[in-house]
Image (tube, rainbow, N blue to C red; front, side, top):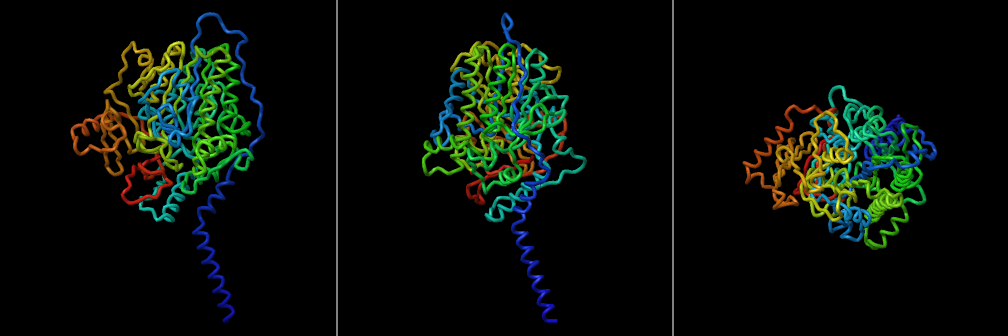
Length: 558
């Protein structure tokens, strides 16, 4: 009997110990499972046979070629044009600076949102989410629940005073990840230009849906589509990785990620090198193939989004600039920035070589501000906030436009503009008619030329993500977070870095801007699907910094 109880006691203790181990390590156990679930086979790299344009250019004046280069999560201060540059200017961006200097710099340009997909939708359509219903970034199945679990596990271990991330299971019939995206009936700039005789090519990130929402069904005749998240395989001898043990999204990406893209809906295959360089290589081939006909190239880089992966050569180069004391993640991030800058230079050089530079419009921007979750200080300096906040650091974006035939180098434009203005501007430059729908953006060519009026209703720009709604009207900016009924009001002329919330001392202006938000929401198209994740985002600290109870946060729903 005693032996029996000893055995049972031992089994019980083993079960307790095992259960405790599983509970304490549940995140790692689940991540390992996530890493192997439902991954497709990925084939070897293939040689892409780009469609070849005519061998001779037609006679007469031709519409301009258009190259739109979009960075991902690029901080406004990552670009040395604005007087800064990464790590106090130690890492410069000479090629992006050259593009800016040879064209127009929009000093008050904004992304469409503080996260990627809604911004990209506004770039493509010139329309707000109140018209399209496309309000939230689609996330892979289980990601919201998983990220919330990891985030709260990390906060528990850190004994963080910041409120926990909330996973809210959406009610009703919600489309799965592959059913989420920009509705196919929305008309993109690619469709508009294609109707006007342009050959249209997409290379890189899309993140606006699959199937009939994918690039080939939204106006792009050819498309290299980013199918996974790595820049190189994690164990490639030429890669330097920087995993972030304080970031729940990063943990998910490293567990789930792989190295793959596809072409025109093909089965996934391995890219032919470090992603930023490979997509640039293919972009140069597209330029050469289409040099004798009008083309629209949308080069949508993954850089400098996490996971942080640099080539060893770029890592070594920036390590010399940053010095021994710099963190590994800063060096890897700097290497990624160096690759992005190199891409811009190579595209400009190729256009020059092919004799296309004078009649080609190059637009450079980023889908939102730099992310606080990478743990790198100053990427959005001097502005407050990060990606996933509507403070200036989260939505201020570079916008440079080079067009030698029409734009004098050194042009600076201080009028506030946003991503919704890109679509009607490019359509006007190409001589294309806008689709017969309501377009919220405005043609910026009058600002560039200085010979026409530029105005928008109520002089207002809008942003939103669920209960977080924002308006800038003139120099006044209101953020209203419905979760806590909290308002931030700033006069950007006096306080461009949003240090002093003056909502309580300017009630008339607060009510005036709230009325604009209500007007903007009147008759809106409902969101295509609900948000599932809510996170408190620290405004003034990176995720690597130790939080305290007095830190100001803004809640972000997606």
